[in-house]
Image (cartoon, rainbow, N blue to C red; front, side, top):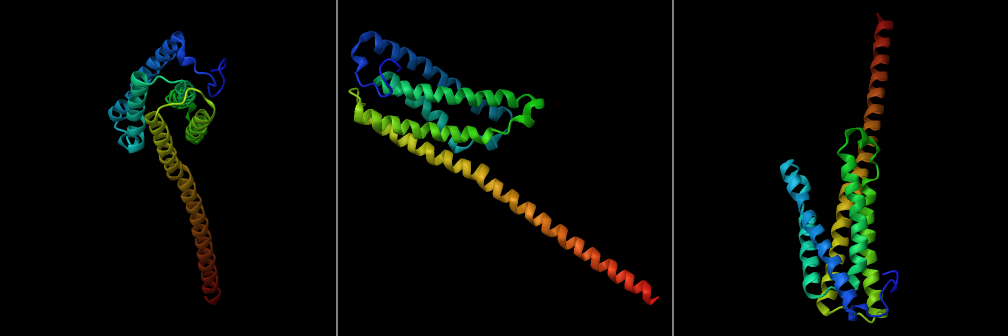
Length: 207
Protein backbone atom coordinates (compact mmCIF):
# COMPACT_ATOMS: atom_id res chain seq x y z
CA UNK A 1 0.00 0.00 0.00
CA UNK A 2 2.83 2.40 0.77
CA UNK A 3 4.44 1.70 -2.60
CA UNK A 4 1.26 2.02 -4.65
CA UNK A 5 -0.54 4.79 -2.81
CA UNK A 6 -3.50 5.06 -0.48
CA UNK A 7 -6.07 4.15 -3.14
CA UNK A 8 -3.92 2.10 -5.52
CA UNK A 9 -3.69 4.31 -8.60
CA UNK A 10 -2.23 1.49 -10.66
CA UNK A 11 -3.68 -2.00 -10.79
CA UNK A 12 -1.09 -4.21 -9.15
CA UNK A 13 -3.45 -7.17 -9.36
CA UNK A 14 -2.39 -7.57 -12.96
CA UNK A 15 0.90 -8.84 -11.57
CA UNK A 16 0.68 -12.47 -10.52
CA UNK A 17 2.96 -12.21 -7.48
CA UNK A 18 0.99 -9.23 -6.11
CA UNK A 19 -2.31 -11.05 -6.48
CA UNK A 20 -0.80 -14.06 -4.72
CA UNK A 21 0.49 -11.90 -1.85
CA UNK A 22 -2.87 -10.20 -1.38
CA UNK A 23 -4.67 -13.55 -1.48
CA UNK A 24 -2.31 -15.03 1.11
CA UNK A 25 -2.78 -12.01 3.38
CA UNK A 26 -6.56 -12.27 3.05
CA UNK A 27 -6.38 -15.97 3.91
CA UNK A 28 -4.69 -15.21 7.25
CA UNK A 29 -7.16 -12.39 7.84
CA UNK A 30 -10.00 -14.86 7.19
CA UNK A 31 -8.53 -17.26 9.76
CA UNK A 32 -8.32 -14.40 12.26
CA UNK A 33 -12.02 -13.61 11.74
CA UNK A 34 -12.87 -17.27 12.42
CA UNK A 35 -10.86 -17.21 15.65
CA UNK A 36 -12.81 -14.14 16.80
CA UNK A 37 -15.96 -16.27 16.87
CA UNK A 38 -14.53 -17.67 20.10
CA UNK A 39 -15.57 -14.37 21.73
CA UNK A 40 -19.16 -15.56 21.62
CA UNK A 41 -18.21 -18.98 22.98
CA UNK A 42 -16.38 -17.41 25.92
CA UNK A 43 -19.31 -15.09 26.68
CA UNK A 44 -21.69 -18.05 26.75
CA UNK A 45 -19.37 -20.16 28.92
CA UNK A 46 -18.98 -17.26 31.36
CA UNK A 47 -22.78 -16.81 31.34
CA UNK A 48 -22.49 -13.22 30.11
CA UNK A 49 -25.56 -13.48 27.92
CA UNK A 50 -26.01 -9.70 27.93
CA UNK A 51 -22.84 -9.45 25.84
CA UNK A 52 -24.23 -11.71 23.12
CA UNK A 53 -26.19 -8.97 21.36
CA UNK A 54 -27.36 -8.71 17.77
CA UNK A 55 -24.48 -6.31 17.11
CA UNK A 56 -21.93 -8.75 18.50
CA UNK A 57 -23.24 -11.81 16.63
CA UNK A 58 -23.89 -10.02 13.34
CA UNK A 59 -20.54 -8.23 13.35
CA UNK A 60 -18.45 -11.35 13.95
CA UNK A 61 -20.51 -13.63 11.70
CA UNK A 62 -20.66 -11.16 8.83
CA UNK A 63 -16.92 -10.45 8.96
CA UNK A 64 -16.30 -14.17 8.43
CA UNK A 65 -18.69 -14.24 5.46
CA UNK A 66 -17.25 -11.06 3.93
CA UNK A 67 -13.61 -12.10 4.31
CA UNK A 68 -14.38 -15.54 2.85
CA UNK A 69 -16.28 -14.04 -0.10
CA UNK A 70 -13.48 -11.61 -0.91
CA UNK A 71 -10.86 -14.32 -0.54
CA UNK A 72 -12.69 -16.70 -2.88
CA UNK A 73 -14.08 -14.37 -5.52
CA UNK A 74 -12.36 -10.99 -5.45
CA UNK A 75 -9.11 -10.44 -3.50
CA UNK A 76 -8.99 -6.80 -4.62
CA UNK A 77 -6.56 -4.04 -3.67
CA UNK A 78 -9.28 -2.34 -1.64
CA UNK A 79 -9.14 -5.12 0.93
CA UNK A 80 -5.60 -4.17 1.96
CA UNK A 81 -6.79 -1.00 3.67
CA UNK A 82 -9.82 -2.69 5.24
CA UNK A 83 -7.66 -5.52 6.57
CA UNK A 84 -5.01 -3.17 7.98
CA UNK A 85 -7.32 -0.72 9.72
CA UNK A 86 -9.55 -3.49 11.09
CA UNK A 87 -6.56 -5.43 12.44
CA UNK A 88 -5.22 -2.28 14.12
CA UNK A 89 -8.54 -1.62 15.88
CA UNK A 90 -8.79 -5.25 17.02
CA UNK A 91 -5.26 -5.17 18.41
CA UNK A 92 -6.27 -2.29 20.67
CA UNK A 93 -9.58 -3.94 21.57
CA UNK A 94 -8.06 -7.27 22.56
CA UNK A 95 -5.30 -5.49 24.47
CA UNK A 96 -8.07 -3.92 26.53
CA UNK A 97 -9.70 -7.31 27.10
CA UNK A 98 -6.39 -8.80 28.25
CA UNK A 99 -5.78 -5.94 30.68
CA UNK A 100 -9.34 -6.11 32.01
CA UNK A 101 -8.71 -9.74 32.98
CA UNK A 102 -6.22 -8.46 35.58
CA UNK A 103 -8.23 -7.21 38.62
CA UNK A 104 -5.48 -4.83 39.73
CA UNK A 105 -5.64 -2.97 36.40
CA UNK A 106 -9.40 -2.57 36.02
CA UNK A 107 -9.50 0.81 37.74
CA UNK A 108 -7.13 2.18 35.12
CA UNK A 109 -9.17 1.06 32.11
CA UNK A 110 -11.17 4.26 31.76
CA UNK A 111 -10.75 4.35 27.99
CA UNK A 112 -13.19 1.59 27.03
CA UNK A 113 -15.67 3.96 25.38
CA UNK A 114 -12.93 5.31 23.14
CA UNK A 115 -12.59 1.86 21.58
CA UNK A 116 -16.17 2.18 20.33
CA UNK A 117 -15.33 5.64 18.99
CA UNK A 118 -12.32 4.16 17.25
CA UNK A 119 -14.54 1.52 15.67
CA UNK A 120 -16.87 4.20 14.35
CA UNK A 121 -13.91 6.11 12.91
CA UNK A 122 -12.77 2.85 11.32
CA UNK A 123 -16.02 2.33 9.42
CA UNK A 124 -16.19 5.97 8.36
CA UNK A 125 -12.64 5.80 7.06
CA UNK A 126 -13.47 2.62 5.13
CA UNK A 127 -16.34 4.41 3.40
CA UNK A 128 -14.11 7.40 2.58
CA UNK A 129 -11.37 5.12 1.27
CA UNK A 130 -13.92 3.21 -0.77
CA UNK A 131 -15.28 6.37 -2.44
CA UNK A 132 -11.75 7.56 -3.18
CA UNK A 133 -10.97 4.17 -4.71
CA UNK A 134 -13.97 4.41 -7.02
CA UNK A 135 -12.93 7.90 -8.10
CA UNK A 136 -9.15 7.53 -8.40
CA UNK A 137 -8.12 3.90 -8.73
CA UNK A 138 -7.73 1.82 -11.87
CA UNK A 139 -8.64 -1.25 -9.78
CA UNK A 140 -12.32 -0.49 -9.29
CA UNK A 141 -14.24 -3.19 -7.41
CA UNK A 142 -17.23 -5.08 -8.77
CA UNK A 143 -20.85 -4.18 -8.04
CA UNK A 144 -21.14 -6.85 -5.35
CA UNK A 145 -17.99 -5.65 -3.60
CA UNK A 146 -19.41 -2.13 -3.69
CA UNK A 147 -22.68 -3.33 -2.20
CA UNK A 148 -21.06 -5.43 0.53
CA UNK A 149 -18.67 -2.68 1.65
CA UNK A 150 -21.14 0.21 1.58
CA UNK A 151 -24.05 -1.71 3.12
CA UNK A 152 -22.11 -3.29 5.98
CA UNK A 153 -19.93 -0.28 6.78
CA UNK A 154 -23.06 1.90 6.92
CA UNK A 155 -24.94 -0.67 9.01
CA UNK A 156 -22.01 -1.01 11.43
CA UNK A 157 -21.92 2.77 11.85
CA UNK A 158 -25.62 2.72 12.79
CA UNK A 159 -25.30 -0.28 15.14
CA UNK A 160 -22.12 0.88 16.87
CA UNK A 161 -23.49 4.42 17.09
CA UNK A 162 -26.63 3.11 18.77
CA UNK A 163 -24.52 0.99 21.12
CA UNK A 164 -22.40 4.02 22.07
CA UNK A 165 -25.45 6.17 22.78
CA UNK A 166 -27.13 3.48 24.89
CA UNK A 167 -23.98 2.42 26.74
CA UNK A 168 -22.31 5.76 27.38
CA UNK A 169 -24.34 8.85 26.46
CA UNK A 170 -27.67 7.75 27.98
CA UNK A 171 -25.90 6.05 30.89
CA UNK A 172 -24.06 9.29 31.69
CA UNK A 173 -27.33 11.24 31.55
CA UNK A 174 -28.97 8.76 33.94
CA UNK A 175 -26.01 9.05 36.30
CA UNK A 176 -26.23 12.85 36.33
CA UNK A 177 -29.99 12.72 36.89
CA UNK A 178 -29.49 10.28 39.76
CA UNK A 179 -26.83 12.52 41.33
CA UNK A 180 -29.12 15.54 41.03
CA UNK A 181 -31.96 13.57 42.59
CA UNK A 182 -29.71 12.50 45.46
CA UNK A 183 -28.71 16.12 46.04
CA UNK A 184 -32.36 17.17 46.06
CA UNK A 185 -33.29 14.37 48.45
CA UNK A 186 -30.41 15.33 50.74
CA UNK A 187 -31.53 18.96 50.72
CA UNK A 188 -35.13 17.97 51.50
CA UNK A 189 -34.00 15.70 54.35
CA UNK A 190 -31.79 18.44 55.78
CA UNK A 191 -34.67 20.90 55.58
CA UNK A 192 -37.03 18.44 57.28
CA UNK A 193 -34.48 17.83 60.03
CA UNK A 194 -34.10 21.55 60.57
CA UNK A 195 -37.86 22.04 60.81
CA UNK A 196 -38.12 19.09 63.18
CA UNK A 197 -35.35 20.49 65.40
CA UNK A 198 -37.01 23.90 65.47
CA UNK A 199 -40.31 22.33 66.45
CA UNK A 200 -38.63 20.35 69.24
CA UNK A 201 -36.92 23.50 70.44
CA UNK A 202 -40.19 25.42 70.58
CA UNK A 203 -41.84 22.56 72.48
CA UNK A 204 -39.02 22.64 75.04
CA UNK A 205 -39.46 26.39 75.54
CA UNK A 206 -43.18 25.96 76.16
CA UNK A 207 -42.48 23.35 78.81
